[in-house]
Amino acid sequence: MDPTLKLHTDTDIDVMALSPMLRGMVLTLRYADEHDGIGLTKSDAMNRKFVHWAAAAFNWPGHTPEELFIVNKVLNEHDLFPLWPVRNLLHHLKLIRRYKGTMRATALGRSLAADPATFYDLVAPLYLYRFVHDEYMRIGEDHGVLGNWHIFLNLINIEARQGCKSARLIEVLYGITDNENYDPHYSSVSSTFRINVLRPLCWLGLLSEETDGKRMFKDSTYHKTALWMASLKLESDNQSKLRLVK
Image 1 (cartoon, rainbow, N blue to C red):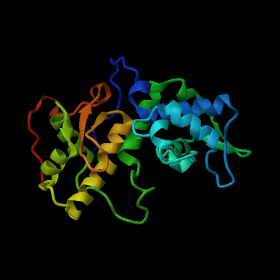
Image 2 (tube, rainbow, N blue to C red):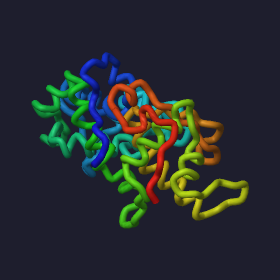
Image 3 (tube, rainbow, N blue to C red):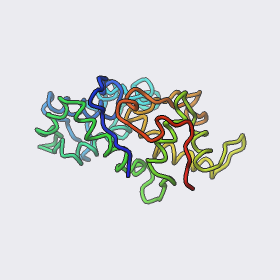
């Protein structure tokens, strides 16, 4: 069974500030409500006007206008990659609907956008545990990671108390280490683990990522956020070591 992921009743934190995923979903719904919908292109993509607005408003780490416009003169929906899970989750939960060339917030969508804490409790377990995190990038291939969320979260709960690198997590989980020489197997495991485990945790706001130089060549250090403490209770909370079943 996956660990319970829900805000504690006694918590008082700004979920919108901590969770890029929730912030993106809420702001998308509010924009659609305030602008008579989000315009759609003939190919059903969100129009550039909204995408440019979203890039600035979302304040999504790694996807700010300064970073995006380095390689793009204009932004289409696929250029702002986080719009992929945001839009898919909104559609899945029936919080938006298509209407006359636009995408509009439903009554349920407007209601949840006004109550971020309740919205988070709905979205967090669905996104983390049920969403296929690499579908957009690797269609038709099996790139799952060995393990489960019970193991991943308890391990990170211990290792990230003072911050940890993904290389440490991979070494503990799979018994393989990084070295100075290129290792295609290690590179594949590392990329898959980052895409399917670490990135979703960061996008949901449970972890923060501190990059160490150029992202594609250097490992990052990951820290638990206040949202992790406020929404997860794990077996390892009072443990210094975790016994992994191989």
